[in-house]
Amino acid sequence: MSKVPSITLNNGTAMPQLGFGVWQVPDDEAFTTVGHALEAGYRSIDTAAVYGNEEGTGKALAASGIARDELFVTTKLWNSASETWTRDSVLREFDASLEKLGLEYVDLYLIHWPRAMRDDYLTIWRAFEDIAKSGRAKAIGVSNFLPQHLERLLGETSIVPAVNQVELHPQLQQAEARAFHTRHGIATEAWSPLGQGRGLLEDPTIAQLAAKHGKTPAQVVLRWHLQLGNIVIPKSATPSRIRENIDVFGFELDAEDLSSLARLDVGKRLGPDPATFDV
Image (cartoon, rainbow, N blue to C red; front, side, top):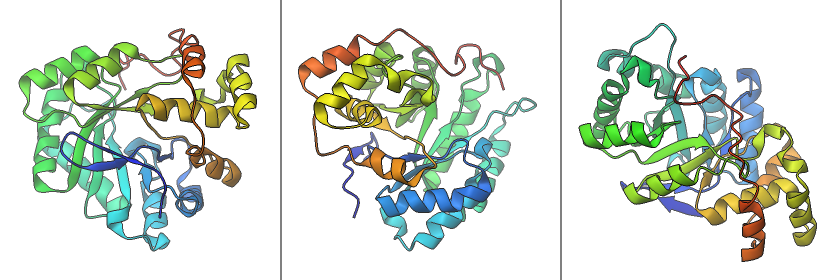
């Protein structure tokens, strides 16, 4: 059984706090990579329609022999450049994801980006509400939504998102968003939690903490996420790192460590700005 603790979402669904992301894993490699993650103890797998690997991911889940109720599967609705979504088109896209995954339901379905300039995320969300009511998604949420987007959802629809998955790492700590989520019972999930291998793990502060605790820089950063209360989905294609990234429950950062990491926040965004991203 997995040793990863769970967070209870606002609708009572239990979600592992640490999962495995498959962004940039080709479909023909997803079977093997997800298989390694499941063998290492991960039970939460995060994919998306745009990743193009739902089919390989689903095959790995099926081949694992792990009972469906022990798995937590997330996928996401992509925002096609040519599409302004209608209720029916959202439902068709969801059906396509389920078919590729080979599942009767997903545990979490997310809107991948708000694209506020298209003014269709309320329509999308109302279709998501129908999916949730049908039981084919145990929980629904969003990704990359800013507080102003969430305010509009909260004011004009009936289900509060269970999760907002946002770019979050020590150099982009998202204090305003995390505080908003806490006030409204929305779980914060971090994508690119390790900074995409673009210098974060070489930071001297993180290196010092890794030496102090006898851990790797990645383990220190993942432990920081967990102690903040974030849900986190590190990705790796290397079996040893897959195992390393789940081995973060045998130590704890102290208050001084957390203060040192707090000082690394420089608002450094590695991905697109949700206020302007339109794909």
